[in-house]
Image 1 (cartoon, rainbow, N blue to C red):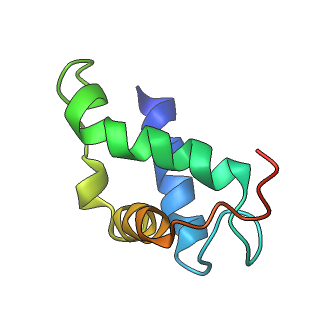
Image 2 (tube, rainbow, N blue to C red; image 1 turned 30 degrees about the horizontal axis):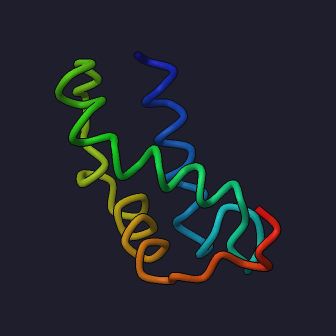
Image 3 (cartoon, rainbow, N blue to C red; image 1 turned 135 degrees about the horizontal axis):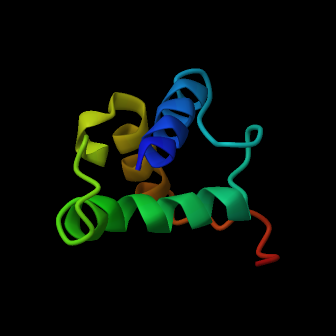
Length: 79
């Protein structure tokens, strides 16, 4: 479980200075992370007992999830 939260901490830091994971455009990596983030608090936190912190407790990750959810933009449509 330690590695999971280390990875979330790294993502939190990365998203502090950028809108998307890789550059200025949304990519497949963003959509894949988004799916994990929206499931995390309901599923991983409660059912799988990955309960050190919720995604809601991460300022940048939770903002990122809201932002990706609101875009409705799937980039160039190649995935």
